[in-house]
Image (cartoon, rainbow, N blue to C red):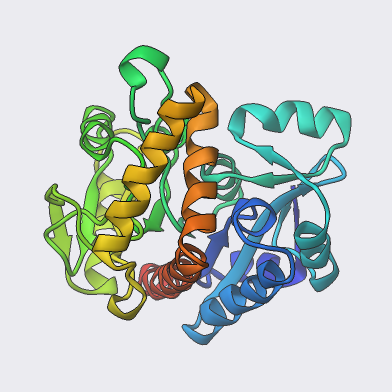
Amino acid sequence: MRTTDEVQAALSGGRAIVALESTILAHGLPPGRNRKVATRLEETVRAAGAVPATIAVLDGEPRIGLTSAELDRVCSTDLAKLSRRDLGPAYALGRDGATTVAATAAIAAAGGIRVFGTGGLGGVHRGAADTFDVSADLDVLAETPIVVVCSGVKSILDIAATLEVLETRSIPVLGYRTATFPAFYLRESAYPAPWTVQTPAEAAAVARAHFGEVPGSAGIVLANPVPPAAEMPRDLHDELLAGGLALLAERGITGPDVTPALLEHFHAASGGVSIDTNEELVVANAGLAAEVAVALAA
């Protein structure tokens, strides 16, 4: 693994570090805007007193922390999307790739980073009883000791089944200042959050106890609702979801093509609202992750 001097100095000095993924930059946001968001994320982490470590694979090498030129490269070239299972082939074949939640968490934890800020966690897909389509994020988090700060899972997934898997895999789920599990674009789903913390210090205390005193190596989900001003209007959300599901049925889209198709429908049919919501929630999560990292380092 290669780290930037800034990240290496923070690791050596026991300072707060926040891992950031690269898939949202390479695949989740439009060209141009993605680079601005990359800068905004890193500035948000620094403003809260932590060091940002955006993670990607470049020339077959895992990078923990990216230079400005490397961020340009991630945001302007066609990178493969790498989950943890794809890391070995990418390393061996010298490929470039943007890391998903699963891959970012694995690389970050291996590098000694304990807090990761992202947009949404992957989960159980609708119809998984037939397709077995379950995100690798869940299994990776079950064996990777890292706090993932996210806005729950997207409402296009099966939220109830996702929460069941998190319970089965002994992954603590904390709602940040909420007793309800968030649904990415929406502040609330129909499901409760198993635990609630009110401050970054409380979240850090849970992390210390979980990683230091509880047997096992599972990570933690810290679910932070999208900021109120950025929440997608619920009537628009419900209209988009219904239209997207009808589109899937009409076109016979199944399996791994379901989520990309639904997300593209949300982006195209919302007039950009979904992308605005996505940006604001990931920035908020990066900021909260930094505050938790600072409290954990202290």
